[in-house]
Amino acid sequence: MKMGTMLRDIAESFFKKSATQLYPFEKLTPPERYRGELYFSPKACTGCALCVKDCPSKAIELTIIDRAAKRYVMKYHRDRCVYCGQCVVNCKFKCLSMSNEDWEHAVLEKQFIAYYGNDDDVAQFLANLAAPAAKPAGS
Ligand code: SF4
Ligand code: SF4
Image (cartoon, rainbow, N blue to C red; front, side, top):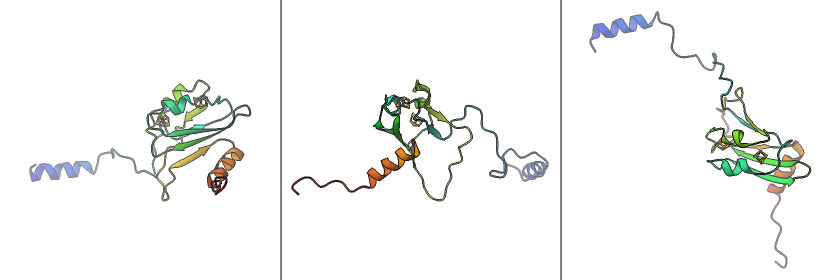
């Protein structure tokens, strides 16, 4: 590129509207169907695990605590999710959704796993995980 052309481009760019946003000070409104954070509601869940089977990334695990009482805990691996939305589309009971508001996931401390379900059920699930494994009888 010739020096004259380059200087003209530089001068012109001072008067042009910026093509980018000053994120995070300026934010675009995501489209209505934007696929952000995945959410799970256990209320209508049947525990069919279709979402788990259909996920191409093995990003969700479902633990059934009590099917009759609708007590489910979903473990969601954000770092594996490719945000394809397949689990949301395939759940016949609309237990899964993706937020177009919750999409800013840059954090200082990594939080790759989210647990969904009723608070008590998640607490019980985590307590069971933390409990030391029972010793085999006779050991
Ligand atoms: S969230 Fe939907 S697809 Fe997944 S186990 Fe529950 S009912 Fe089945
Ligand atoms: S959005 Fe896609 S990758 Fe993410 S949990 Fe659902 S099916 Fe798996």
